[in-house]
Structure formats: structure tokens, C-alpha cells
Image: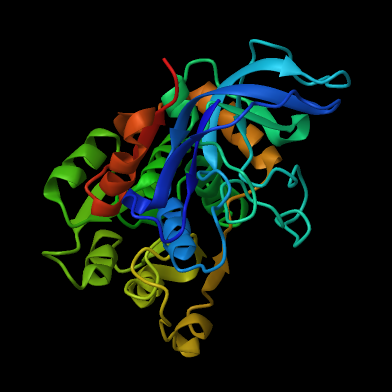
Length: 342
């Protein structure tokens, strides 16, 4: 089978090297899946950067956490799937259900120590897979494992937002657009930011109630307060990090919740004045994707509502490095896909 790996210190775009290796047969409790589409996340860029700084390592495992495809063989003791089923793999293959723990999140697909999905075939335990909604194509289904589940967890599990509430989404990347679509379908009022009026128009077409250009309105937290009649939003899905955190806190109503899911604006410290949380009784929590049970809840909701996630552009398998470059450019709206096979 064909697959990719990241080779540190090799003069290849993003260190991505295409290679051939034999696809192994599934063990008794494993499933062999033909991958049809892979979805990129900002994390995938972070992995290439970390790998590039490593010394003494020949190559990383297969990259990319998110993929969808068809079951083509199952182990002798598999009961949940059969050949022909359409599935996606969990970001954390050992977090099936229950609260987050170090043990359940010890291995994440496509990291520096575990093979991911950027390959023609993958073999994982049957407990790592879940069925995808029938109305989604492979490209759309590939956006579920990280961006979709993160948005679901941030809104409805850790975020505990209720129908009729108001949600602020930052930017128009994969998690934010997924969260906007989920929130709108759940009866929430959605506000979303971007530096691009064109992207904001696309967000409105997908159902955003209010949009803010943070380039022309740098103090966008004041605009959030104006649009909510001085009250603030019930929750913020925070993807930025050091450049946005304090403005996000200021955008919250009293008792509001902020879920931190990323740090695309940088990993440096963002000093937070504790009094801004105390006097507003505001809550802040981190979200690291989610469990297979959350993915299944998401899929049920997507099936009931008919949501189709926003796919910006699809690249061929041979053009994986170009897909990474497009992700790095931040020109996308929603998700970037790599098509695997025909």
C-alpha cells in the first residue's frame, strides 16, 4: 500500500515522504479499512514542525488523525462491523466512553508515536471505529473525528450550552465552522469572526446570525457586547490562544463559559487577570477532542439534522504537500481534504 511519513531534516515539502509498505491482515479484534479521504487539522502542521526539529529519528509514523473509508476485512472476533461498512476512526482510539483520562488519551492517531490515516489502508481495533452518517460523502465524513468531535464537545459536553443561547466562534477554520453549523442546528444564536469579508459572507450563507471582521474591528469584544445588548455571549469556542483569550473572556456574559480548543495565534502565555473571571463568575476549560461515544452522538445529530460540513478544497493523494501548504496559508474556509484512491 501507499502511505506518507514525515522524514526529519530531509529536503521535502513539510518533510512528507511517500512510501510503500505491505498492508497487514487484521488481528482477531481488528478491522482493515480502505481509506477514501483524509481531513487536515492545524495539529498536522504542528506535527511536521515538531518532527523537523527532532534529531536521531529516521521518520515519524504515518501522519493525520482524521480519515474515513470502507471496511474491507475484519478479524475473527469482530462483531461491530462487516465488509462494506462506511466508517471513521476515533482521534483517540482507546477513549471509547467516560471521562477523559491520561490512559484513554495516551495514544492519538497521527502523532509522533502512533500511525495515522494518510495511507491507502489502516488497521485498528474495532473499538476505534464508528459508522458515519449515510448522507455524508467520504470527504465530509473525514471531517468528523477531530474538528467535528471537538466542536461537539466544546459546545454541548464541556460547554453545556442550552438551546436559545448565544455562541461566539473565532475564525472560519474547521472547528469554528463545524461549531457554527452545529450551534445553528441546535437553536443557538451564532456570532463568528474573520479577517475576510468574503469568508464572513460564506458564514452568513451557512447560517451565522452575526459576523465581525476583526481586522477592521480590532476591539471586537466591544462589538460582541453591542450585538448582545451589553450582556455578552453564553459561551465562546476559543481557537486563537495568546492573541484572543482576554478578548474572548470580555465577550462572555456573567456566568458564561469559554472552551479552549486550540492556539493558532501562538503558544506563548496570555496573561489572564483572575479578577476578570471571578467578578463575572466566568468559567474556562480546555477541550482535547473527545471520545468515540461523543463521535457517535455527533453522528446521530448530523443524521437527524442533515448537516453537511463545509469542505473548502479537495487535493489528490499525490498532492498531499500542496494540501499542507494550503492549510498553512490559512486561506481556507472549513476543511481541507486529501482524496485517497479513486
